[in-house]
Amino acid sequence: MIQLINTLANLVLLVFCLWAVLNKHLETQALGTSALSLVAITSFVNIMRPDAFGFWSEQSEVVSNVAVAILAVWFWRRWHQCNYLRKR
Image: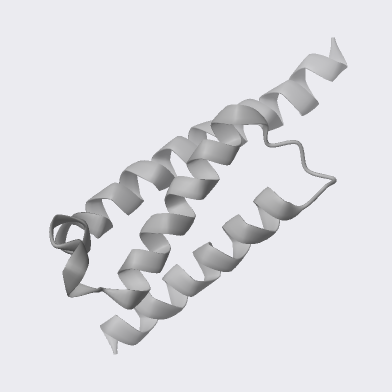
């Protein structure tokens, strides 16, 4: 059951990251695109778990957590820039 939930969560992350990178109305800039791409790649690896990736297949959860943390900082910066700085 946990593996199914993990797979669904990774699928949602993968679809969201692809949508965010390919969306013409969302300006992700370099840091956002890099973080979204890293999350999408690690989500794909978490879903597929290919043996050919070796280390990446085993450590993809850790890399995914780091990528999501980078993405969270990027989202906070974008929110702060759009909401807080406009009020000044």
